[in-house]
Image (cartoon, rainbow, N blue to C red):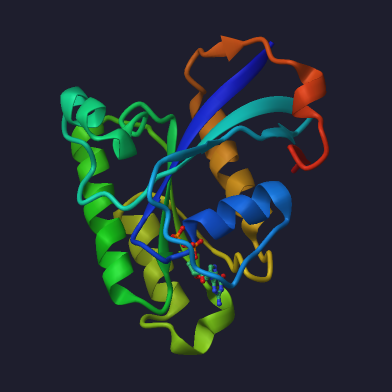
Length: 202
Ligand code: GDP
């Protein structure tokens, strides 16, 4: 029996959501930008502290807002599964202030949806750390805002150079496990999960 965790990866177009996911699962990176038009689900497995978890990672295409109701979620295919995700990765580009504003809006909407007592793990990720010189705000200032005011985790990474990519998933899973995963046990085919590039030991 393996615990499953559904993670929605949300962010403005072009911030590197797909690149982060593909770097994490396939150790693959492309300079060519192919906009994500429809929702895509990846199902890697990971081993953290000796326990195995099956992840359902949703690469969410650009959405104007967090789905406010189940019917909105069902009417808009891009949003399917977003409201019931167990955890969120909100990605912005450290060189693009608009992408940070987008993350700020989505975080607020998640909090409103979940209610003030919510424990849903949210990790804010500043991507494109390799372009550090063009950043719009010092790392420390963003980190303090996100951690102290928003009460979210914060990690900076570079999908391009595979820097801190495993770390960010490890961080999120660590928070989720500490807060108690939803009881969502399922039996999985260990052989499939352990296929090359599908299982990461963190
Ligand atoms: P998405 O729309 O958020 O899924 O963004 P993509 O993953 O498709 O990436 C958008 C563009 O940013 C692509 O051209 C990527 O090559 C580039 N990119 C993604 N991550 C990084 C990064 O860490 N550093 C740099 N310099 N470029 C990146």
